[in-house]
Length: 265
Image (tube, rainbow, N blue to C red; front, side):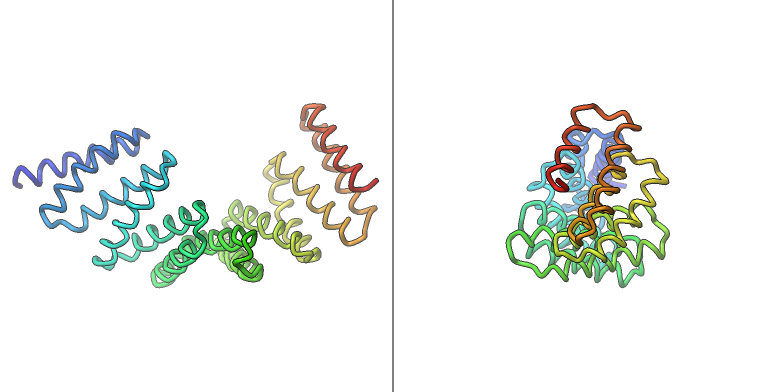
């Protein structure tokens, strides 16, 4: 092993240790050294891996512009190497970042690329996560009138079907929650009730107070919009009672009660 290769491996190992210990700035600095050395040696795989970890470190400290630029470089190198798992992961992260930045066209393009890679690998959980993220991208872009709500609904439903197969119940409930809110906004109240009720069952078992209360209110709102005021009132006051049992502050309870009174009269 020559000196350049030895130094590259040293900085790479040190950078990974820093990443694992949450020392992201040190990680970035050490892996930049490693990446430059691997590139000069023509070691494309280690160069790409260094870039991937650097990008993830930037993402973890919320420096999304830098993360996007580095993920793009890593994505190109993994494409040359035909390394499907990392192509999928870079595509997913780029889709997520572009969605956060409001570039929904780019977000959807990269998420579609991730779906293609994970499909080829038969990686069901990553497929589920990507379909969920695609649902979020389509839902977020609805505000700009640049998406059909059915695209988001179908993406969420696809994610839900995968999570059910995998029995990944926490992610299943999160996706049902998101889908339920979208269906409510589209006046698809029966469909919303179904998925919100399933999410409520999960969060009740988990004793997740905040989500239980929010879901009581959302289900109540669905019944109210369907013209079923007694049902709506029942669920709304379940939320208030649950807040009392969970010892929420009187101020928060009163805020909810005012909202219920304004809705139900």
